[in-house]
Structure formats: structure tokens, C-alpha cells
Amino acid sequence: MNLTNGCNQYCFELNEHDVLCGRGSGPNDRVGNVEFRNLVLSRKAEYLAAPSRDAKGRIATEIVDTVRLRGGRFLRKLSPAQAKEAGFKRGTKVYELADEGTVLEKAKQTLRQNRAEFVKTQGSELNAGSNTTINVGNSSGGGDIGSCISTAAHHQPASCRIQPR
Image (cartoon, rainbow, N blue to C red; front, side, top):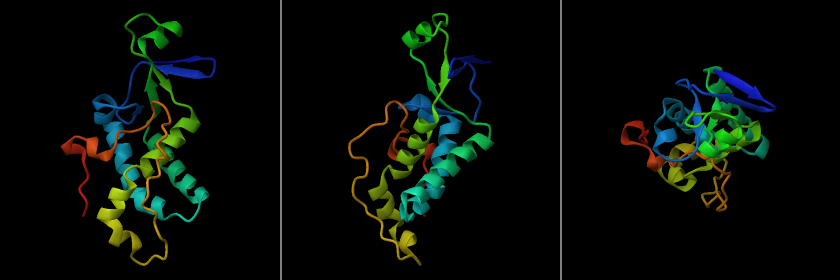
């Protein structure tokens, strides 16, 4: 069931392709979050080698579009206080659609995550036939985009990890 309140859209049921924003085993273990991380991993080398910010933005947008084409949504769970403030009965699990800016930033952050480790394990494949140099410094800048960052790959359960070739 979905409910619209002003510019926020709330839902109470999740589908298997939904991506939950947040940290920890709840969001991390969901099928939709695992699919999202797999999509990111399949495009990570291309993203890291992209020549411009625009090219990187297009890759992130294509990942988000793919999730949505599969029927997935990017959602964040409201805290009990937020749900009560929005007028929902105590104990109701309520999810809110994440705004477009947050969704795209989540995709970009996930693409940048663990860049140095990825380049170290995939480096020879990344540079094969390419004149592009990939900077392996820390790109995170210590910043956080709030509660909508996926958990790092090394925090994935073993059954969800994709092993390097």
C-alpha cells in the first residue's frame, strides 16, 4: 500500500527489488540491496575509468534506472518518532521514497566505495587497452550523505560477496 503526503510517498510493503537506504544487516541482506551492489560492481571499472563527471553521472543514472526497471524503489525506513510525526499509528513500519538527489548520490558513493582495494585486485584488467589512469586515493573525503549509504563490500555476508576473478 502506498500513501502520498505532500511531496513524500510512504509505503508499508517492500518488494524484492526495493533498495533500502541505511546501514547494517537489515538493508544489507535484502535481495534488492544485493542486486544493487552487483549492478554497481558490474559497472565499477567503467565508472572509475570514466573521463568526466558527466560520464560518471550517466553511469550512476543508468544503475538507478535499471533498479527501477526491475520494479525496485529506493526507500528509507522512518524511525518510530518520524512515523508518529507523519501521522501513522505506533508500531507501523513505514518507508519513504528517497529523493532523486539522495538516490543518485547513493549510487555514486557506492561506485566510489573501496576504490583502492578494487583497483588493486582488478588493476590489470582496468588498464588493459586503456590510456586512462585511475587515481586510487581516498575519494570519500570523510563525508557522509546521511543515512543512505550502502554498506562496504567487506561487510557483505559471505554468500553475497562477488569474488575477484
